[in-house]
Length: 297
Image (cartoon, rainbow, N blue to C red):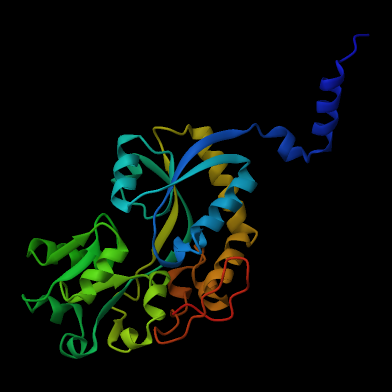
């Protein structure tokens, strides 16, 4: 009978202690994964970064046993790199027929956009039709963003009329809007956190729910060119298991509170979805390691 060398025996003993799933799954990666800054999804915090997407990726890494190499990019660059096959993964992506030609998507939350205007202007232009009817008014959005069926149609009309201002990121959108370069901006509830720290600013703004039936589903984005079907399936199963067992909803609760966390679940049908919390509701910023005491407006 042949004997295994001592190092091999030690390795075999260690492997025997691992759970079956860990023993059966070979390591995968490393994969390049790009984050982008957008409110509570991913933001600078005490010299580093924190947010919902960072916590989701950490949970996915543990569940899938895959290695990720994070990068910070603009949203425009992310979509360009995915389309040209120079990036493996990204987060919080909205699927479209064009994008599904080069990427596979795994949903993990849903939300919808709201329109923000100065209160005095909102009183004069309270509907999308009224806004479109005033040719002097312009909208600012993040280039390459999708905003849901209702708003995408609205934006297309403004683009055709030369009334659309496009910026590289949300911070620039906010600066242009506050500087008066545009009359209206669009934002997700998870993007409002910087403005909520400025009550004087929020008191000047009207938040209009112009697309209440929109259901904007966001997901993990996986490059079809760079990841095989087997690799994509492994990540899909891992993320879907995190959604199914409540791990993703627990991440939401830490950042946005109980009510908004329930409404962000990707499995909630639009006709059963409760209304989002009113924009005037308060938010207490919480670290990802602490339970949130407030709700996200």
